[in-house]
Image 1 (cartoon, rainbow, N blue to C red):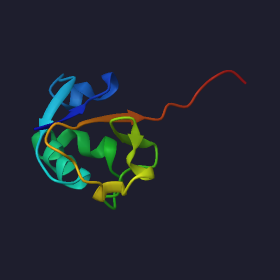
Image 2: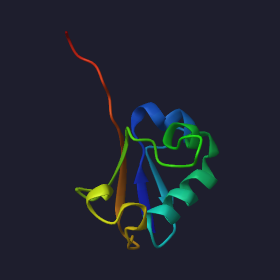
Image 3: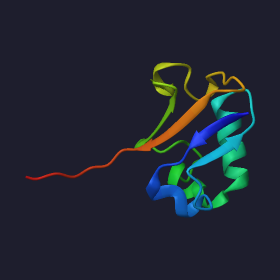
Image 4: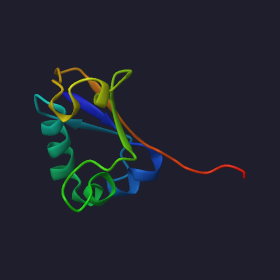
Length: 92
């Protein structure tokens, strides 16, 4: 089964898990499985229209899914996906 690595700031919404096992054949399907397991994650990953928030990046291996086929990117059984929320900040 594929896995999603959950970043530290989102772990409270995923049962404190750092890695969650998911099923599906595309990123959209494995993301839907993740959100069915941990519905509290949805408001942090998707906007009100149900689209992936612009500051949420999902990587399949070392590739941003946006550079692949987006949510329709195919996922293999042993693939590892990572959620990386963009973080703004710094000194002015």
